Image (cartoon, rainbow, N blue to C red):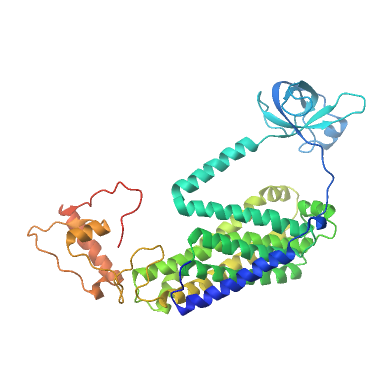
Length: 475
């Protein structure tokens, strides 16, 4: 763990330590006992099978199908399907499933793997029914492609982010869901689990440094604002949680389940995923700007980083809306055909719940940007002059930085990997003063104009190519 480089960072580390103690202490206190978990009836094991052959034919629609009509009635298309059992007491045998309705099935192919439910009959042959298709191989291929892409592009950072993803999944599956099933308060469980996930994954993916610490504290502040707004508007909007079919089924399975609290718990977990992205990006922007010019004051650094933050807000808020709209697309299509007015549709709980989630989550994102930017800017300007940039590269030579200047143009070209101009007189070029090397838009524009003129005259030579994977050092 890197040592704190400034009093501000040390204070933020104390805040993170308090959050960690509260989160992991809360997990211990809320961790459910196995006796508290509702026990469901153990279903008989399903049997994997493979389609050997099938014959589709037109059947006669039932009276109910004709009465309901499309889209609720079936078309009458049916099939006789031969399947080979792959496991179970009858493994290896071929079973014929006769006169199965094909409505709702994908296109059948020989070799498709399916899952069968085996229903035993006293003193008779067991009966099998197709319950689902086996998607596990396809999902494993997709997961493998995802992991390979993350490792190929992200390398060591990508590996650490995958480990963080695995730990997040473990916390959700082994703590958050069981604790809610055991009757614990859903928002409290979600908040405790979310803070634990945030601390573990951010430090694991981005390292223990000033940038990550500022992002964690900023995320926590925005999460508190999100929870407060969610509590107020869910109660004020009379959101009960009963509008969702999934929630209704869960309430039947778990007696006394707080469905209203479950709505807020879902909002907390969903908001955390987007807040992490916003806060880390903002903190990274702040430190990148400060590493470019160590003479920037807090107000100047905050103002420059907020220019990026405003663009981030605009894009992420739109992303959040589209994510919720995509998840509810089938519902929106259904409502659009129901003859319900837009005002009535907007007032319905099932839509109001999504509106509350979108807007409350967006407000949390909006609050996260200035909060994280202000914290990160304060930590950045309080760092010692010789502190290395986040990422381990040597600091730039501003405001007493310890970076050593190259002793020749050739060394400067080799160190920075930039194009160099060839002088016809081979006279050494005069080095810019410190004032000229500071971040100045006019100076940069003038330099680009000179670069363009030299390029047109053919006075530029490219640097030596770097066949390595890493970028050329900027130190």
